[in-house]
Image (cartoon, rainbow, N blue to C red; front, side):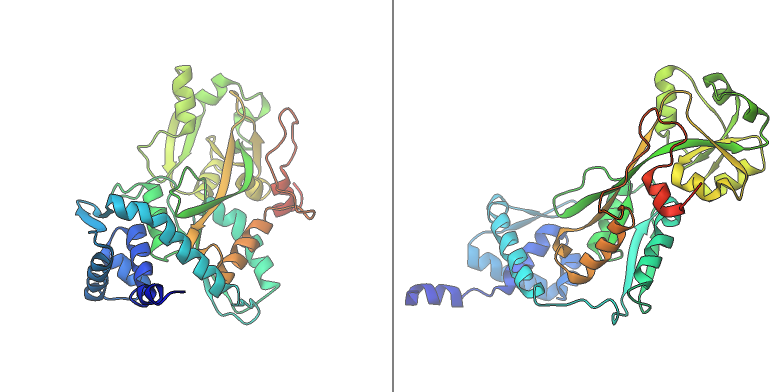
Length: 344
C-alpha cells in the first residue's frame, strides 16, 4: 500500500460510516443518535465531518425528516455492505448461551398469535433455559387509534428496539427488514353446539340471517369477509364488535351468534366452550403468518436463537413447514393444529 493510500485511510474515521448508515435508515437525527449512542450535538458534528470528507451535503431536511441526496443514495449500498460485513466479522466470534442468559425477549403480536404461539414457544425455551423472560407487546391488527398505519407501527417498534421480532400477517416491508413465512391456516366459522342453526347446513342464506360477532381493532374497517360479500352484493348482520378472539368465543358460546376466526384459535376453545367449527358457504379462506425482524439483527446470536425457536414451533419433526388443510379434505386438522394441540 502506498504512503498516499495509507494517508487517505488514516484521514477517515470509520465510525462516520456507521453514522451515515443509521441516519439513512432512520431518517431522523434523534432516533439515529439514540441507536448509535450519540447525543444530537455529536450526531450533528459527525454529519458535518462527513460532509467535509465527501464534499456533499449527503442529507437534506424534508417535512418527514432527513432524505439522502443523489450522491448519498449512490454510495449507501457500499456503506451498508461495509457495515454488515464488519458486523458479521465481529458477531462471528460472539456466543449466545441460552442456559446462562437472563435476557428479556420482546415479541410483537396480537391475541391470536399469542394464544397460538406463546405456550409452545415458552415450552421450547424452558427446555433450554429458565432464566429468560418472554414479553408480548400487543399489536393491533389494523391501525392505532391516532390513525397511524399498522405497518408503520410495526416498523417503528422494530426500529427503536421496542420489540425483537413481530409475528403477524405480513404485507410488503422495506428492504431494511427481513420477513420469513411461518405457516398458513384456514379460517372457520364458529357457533355454539346448541345454536338452533346447528342442525342444518350452513348455507349462504343461513350465514347472512344469523347475527355476527366481528373481531377487529378498527370497528369502522371492512375486513376481507365484508369485501367478499360486497363483491357478491350481500351484507352480513353484525351484532357485536370486539377486539379479541377470546371475547368473540365467549359471546358465541352463550348466544345464537356466529364468528369467523383462524382455525387454531377455534380449536383451542372447541371442547371447553362446546363449539362447532364450520366451513364458509362461499369458499375457503387461508391466512398466512410471518415473522419480521430488522435486517441489521440478521446475524445477532440472540436474535438468531429466538427466531429459530419461533420457527421450530411451526415445523414438523422432519423439518418440513406446516401448512393449511388440503382442499377438498373435510374435517382434516392442519399440521399446525396437530403440532399445537395434539388432538381434536
